[in-house]
Length: 219
Image (cartoon, rainbow, N blue to C red; front, side, top):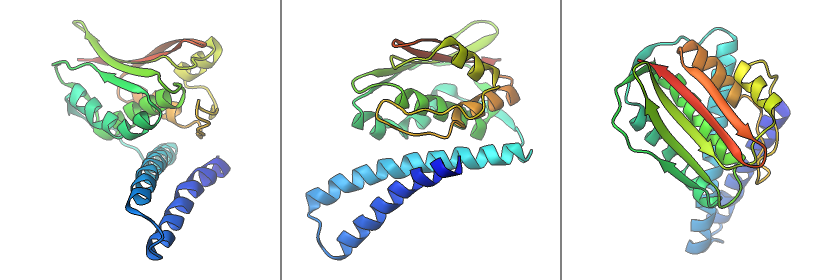
């Protein structure tokens, strides 16, 4: 895990160091700088999200994470979180569609819910090929408000999905469709924080056709 974290952090920092060196020497044109800065911004955003998840996971393992539920506007929360991924989705030519809907508030820890949504969207981006799509939509009944995150990516085998939903996998990790790496903590955090916040975490997947994860909030 430490090896993968070190590798993933080395790339954006090396790019930043090189960019600053070229900038100091005035060896970059405005067009070159614009291209490099956009790419660097995307790399640093991904690294920041990974570090965020890593730090929260570590604190959670040490029983240092306390769940503090508050009323949350779920569609607004989703819009804000997805905003962090727009640049990455554009670079991979993936369309992110978000249903606009007025819903009653849900109750969850704001930071933990952010991490849950963040990791599910990040995972969908990782395993969806260029030109694909990710759709976030809502349904609700008298008991639950449901958030669905669906992609048309590579999908997964049923035994892998079962491990994820049961939370008994041990840092499952694989390469994404653009060779993205991960340390396998994202979905583990999703399961742990969903349980802490009384959110039902479910999903379905077909290899080669995509994956749908659903979060069900009681209200």
